[in-house]
Length: 330
Image (tube, rainbow, N blue to C red; front, top):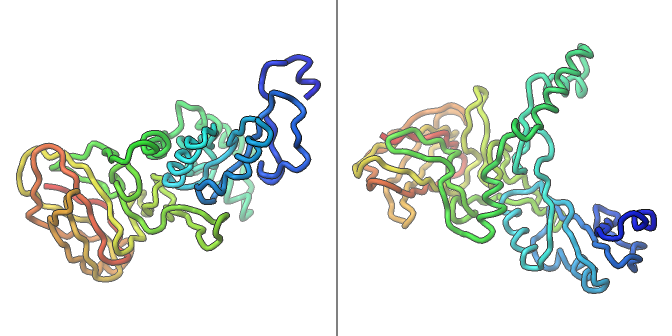
């Protein structure tokens, strides 16, 4: 720090402890009157107890604290963490992107077939790719990391900004009736407002029994909803459990009675229930076994009443194991 202060007497010097920024033994007392502590936070409860060590540092040494690294969890955890940090007036830095093909950042870079070929070679051996192939592949990945080329994850952005202060829901996409609606296009919003899922957060540092992948399919969105990709690159909601539900905001062209053609797969017989957001039941649908988790069939449900304009509906799963790909409103 002496060398820094010979050329810069103005800026804050940030120090970070050992053990992922959480152990400051040997770094106190502070030796400069313009310093801040930086710490990390991952996979634990979002409560005052998990911040106590950092709050104590701030109080004891009269120095700012900064959450310098965090992320790699679900949207639920992100929303709760930011609410906690705002409560204690702590600034923070999340990973904007970490790891290729990852749902838990505000941006993402998708893996390319060529890069996967390199990964397979590094892992399994086999025929060695040429130097030219490897260089071209890696430069393509580097180019994909340019901000103009990344995928923007609107669900993560919504969770980190709007949802920290607003419990309302909003459409993920502009869904129309008549029209085809993908199961993965459920509304944006907090868990319990836009969807309900029983496995939605990773807390293994606080409790090893609470290790979770939250979205076990690791596709598309960073909520607790489990989204998978088929072999032909279509997406569906899977690993559903009794009591879970999804909400959709649908704009109807006319006030009329619509038919839903529901595209689903299931190893067992099951039921789903359709309600409006006020809790009025619109239909109960019996689903026969399709013979496999990705063997798809369509069941038609008549008599779904929509008013002209905005309609909010919820699809409730009354059994485990129903995979839902889409429903066409006509």
